[in-house]
Image 1 (spheres, helix red, strand yellow):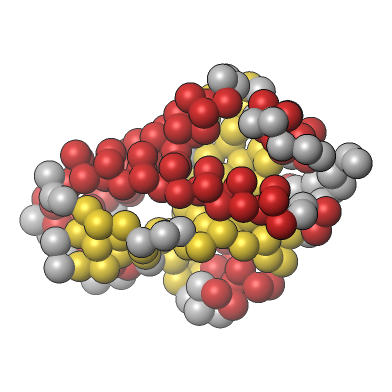
Image 2 (image 1 turned 90 degrees about the vertical axis):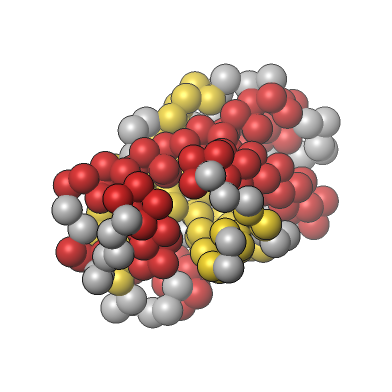
Length: 207
């Protein structure tokens, strides 16, 4: 049966996506650990298919200010991924690189934004490389597009651009512990349905 929306995913397919989330998050955490020169413990990622409004609620409501890093996927897997990061993530990056604590994600300067984008690029590369190694598929990613704004405004971009793909997204909730700090990294993943079918085919999962 062809997949038309994330609602069509059965429990086995969701379990496969959760396992991919585990592997991708583990790779991302390893890369993050090397960059921050700190050991990182990660919890088990929580992977859910949610409507856009449910994602917004999970992030604290439409007026919650966060950083959005939008990364486009191309090659064998097409779609997009977006990291949604709160202030403590930005603080960890800027403190590590510049010894500077940020007062607000809205007050980040160009150097801060560049460092956070590079961190997002490294994490995204590690994530998709894990999937590529697992499946043998070629996946390319774009340079992250940075935005600091309210969640409602940030989420309107994928909601409009991918409206024809699905009204739901895969929401991945990661928890990292860096030294004594807990850092939550939320990500939404929106692969095109044909790409998702190819991914399952490569993994030998019945559609």
